[in-house]
Length: 483
Ligand code: NDP
Image (cartoon, rainbow, N blue to C red; front, side, top):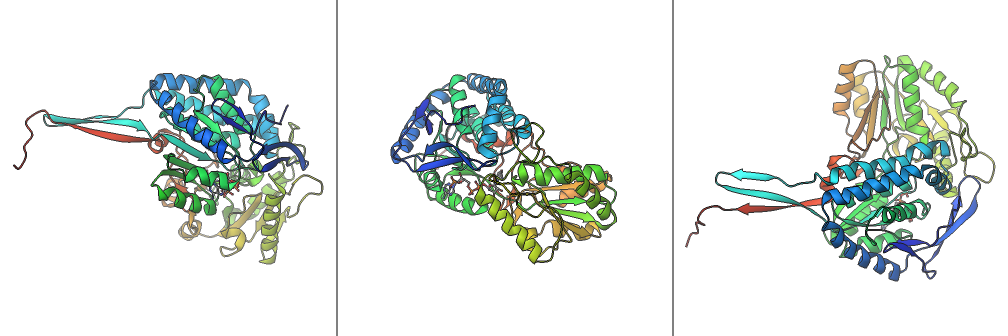
């Protein structure tokens, strides 16, 4: 697998290089080795991306929805055919184990392209009759959209943003995280191969400054960011200068509530999925695991037993199911939170240390007896650190679960159906789970409330964030005017 891309950027249907841009070294998290080098976009690259995006958007919007959808579905098929190679690249880019990337990254990107490709032909406005007069709405694209991605799901994020944007007749410029710049280039390449006009989906590299210059450009109609709350504040404010449309997919500190009557095995599985998949680098993770006191010992015992079977190691080995953190920086951030957990009196029941070697490995870590005020229960850690908190009653746990300014996700494990729905209805969160955790099918909206963001990705709901309605009133009779 070749990791060095043909050039840093993909603009106007081809790879583009400008070595005047700052050098970005791509590091394989499992070994610390430099595996590729790209350059940040210069103003000339950004201008080429904007100019070709504007041109391609007009050409693309002139096609029928069915024609646009066909291109997206063809891209989905190509991605599925190349899933192995794309998954290997994603593993180099992120360090996530191949056993994960083969089933959760390119495949999820293909799902988005297939779903929105299927929807493109049925996007319509509506007819409204008002007596003899009537009106209609036209669903129009927004224009040139900018997508800015985080480093945990580079291929998926590019397509969760790109697929609905393109289905609606927009063009997109996508800026991946500087930490994981490789996979999105392949998405751009495949879209052209599938028949997308040159310039429709451009990828430019760079740090926050490149993202900022795209966000502030008056020719850009919409910005969709996946990133931290802090970056979200900056990007939202910058977009507000020219009243741009925004989607903000930001961080979380989500609760997972496990009642005494839950199936222990299922609840432990949910807690593992919601804390350790992708080495804990998932925005919607249920990192505050509230466990009712009657089930606590059984839960912790099975959790420890199952954690001991985690296969930590070479991400390319198909048996590995727990890889390194994406970067040394992120590993150090997580280690500092682990130290805070210890210092503030949480009881360490598993892990708690980095793993020796050149890679950025850290042990899957569990703290028990965590209280609501501890730093590890309040701040997003974005790593494999689970906090287990005790509770007695349903009435007590709901306000505690909701006691965060973020509101991305929430989950409940119980065998009592009525309670499950009652609890879910009280959660202040956008994406919720009953007897499961972290499922994100393209058919369901995904997004948060509170500081976790605005807007929704996936599902028919995403269409509203990549299109706008023009309404037309048609008078059939005389116009009555006052003079
Ligand atoms: P960051 O917020 O650091 O960065 C996100 C992206 O924004 C990067 O591409 C970054 O570029 C770019 N950026 C940074 N500053 C600016 C700016 N001023 N203007 C425009 N763009 C800018 O997030 P991470 O990459 O560290 O990702 C982790 C965060 O993402 C976590 O908080 C996580 O919860 C959240 N996330 C949310 C998801 C959701 O759907 N709700 C899903 C996945 C992650 P660069 O990094 O190259 O400087």
